[in-house]
Image 1: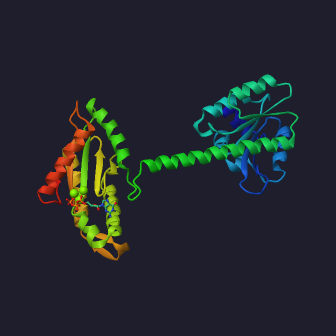
Image 2: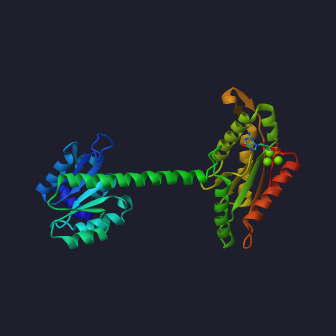
Image 3: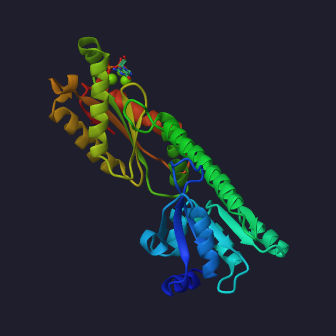
Length: 327
Ligand code: GH3
Ligand code: MG
Ligand code: MG
Ligand code: MG
């Protein structure tokens, strides 16, 4: 189907992309791709849609029809022509990730009731029967486009709230809930013979003093700055989370405890080595951290046990004077 359409495009036959404003109120124009192998018919459909709007050609707007369909808001597709199989095109577009939700308004002849049913069955969003009534065409386009926009906005909101649900708002790191679900999966893999997974639990030293001495806002600044340094010193495959107030946990997949210790030491040095900027850059503050690392013990390990071992190591680091890593 794609080849055929490419041929059509190359031969200069009319496949028009034009702008219409489905609301007719001059804002938010929709991009409409008109596909019809009868040139006069295509021109007429474009003209109906164009009444208020500015046309543009497919060649100007897009690469090919496959890509073109992915960038428009709706396709108006005439069925029953001779040069392509509109039904096949319908199911083809429905199976393409990029056009899965593209509204398709199928145009059929008055005697083509069976074709209309097939088209709906294969994923056409709506049917328009010839002879085309321009008002009806505009109304059906408008309905489909506003439906699509509504679904798109719901999807964007869903993505956003899913993102919020796994993110710590102060630091932008993952939150504990996300960390636990990830670690659960890594643990399953490790228990089944996958690579070792190390975790590093970091805790800022004497953080209470930061809050008490400089205020809670400065404490927050330090937590954000620490998160930035942490992110800069782990691999893209590692997962950094805010575990609690001033505690952070890094999941390191496929990492031995020796490798984890090297990473942990590097992070500790990056914290200890350069004072933190506070009060929006007006001041500096020395901060240190302690860390405890642990690695999976297959085949019967659990997330709780792993974190408990890291926590015990962290406790030893604190007990033995802070600003150090224990594994
Ligand atoms: P230690 O070296 O033993 O870890 O001492 P500490 O003072 O860091 O430990 P403690 O756990 O007693 O204190 C942690 C403090 O972190 C207490 C709490 O007020 C502070 N904290 C927790 N969450 C936040 C936050 O979101 N913002 C700020 N500014 N402070 C926080
Ligand atoms: Mg703590
Ligand atoms: Mg602390
Ligand atoms: Mg503490």
